[in-house]
Image 1 (cartoon, rainbow, N blue to C red):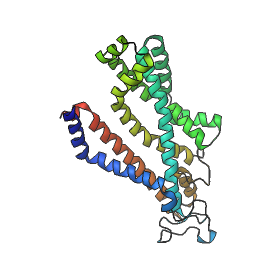
Image 2 (image 1 turned 180 degrees about the horizontal axis):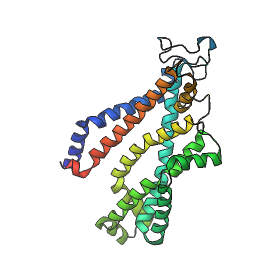
Image 3 (image 1 turned 120 degrees about the horizontal axis):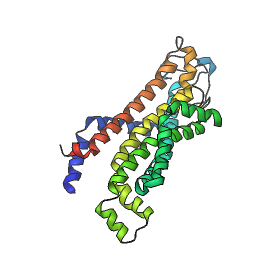
Image 4 (image 1 turned 135 degrees about the vertical axis):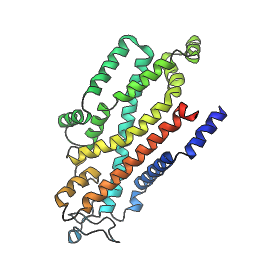
Length: 281
């Protein structure tokens, strides 16, 4: 056991993709948490006399058509991106892990029903399905969170179901049944801890996808609404001024690329580190 932990630690420290991804993830977290201290102004503060100012020492990312500090808006936007990503993944994990455990453990009719629902969800184009839900509920950031979570649980459910089926017949699960453990207790205390590695990887890779999807929907006007500093909203506002003030679109776009790339690198690094075959290499 100790030798396995040492192998994992050694692989973490010598895995450059994981290290870079972790640094980016932590930097985004720090910016989001301390946005009030990092941003020189509030994201709503307007100064029409300084509209369309290019990047400078006073305004590192320039100003928009209302004279708002673009640096401040991008910094505050990191809070929305992280909040949305974490809530979406939380709901997605609750649905996917819960239904996957139930389907894999009980099998039979329950398994077929949950698998059918997962297949139906899987077969629909996620963005189109999400847009249909938003159109029914109305455009808002909360409805975007709900819609993205609803359309993205199937992959996690299928993975958890498969892993549960392979674990439920092991000796320690049979021993738990023999001593009278309840089904819920077996699933939560004996099965779930032993299938956490793929779940951690899926959650890490789901974060950037959730952020990217919600930003895209906000860009289309279906998510966060102005004057919210959502990166999709800022990109949408900058479309009309691409030639006059390209920085309005460039900097939120770079922030999105930086965040999504970092989270993807973190997820890929975790996948490599937690893969038993790679650990034995």
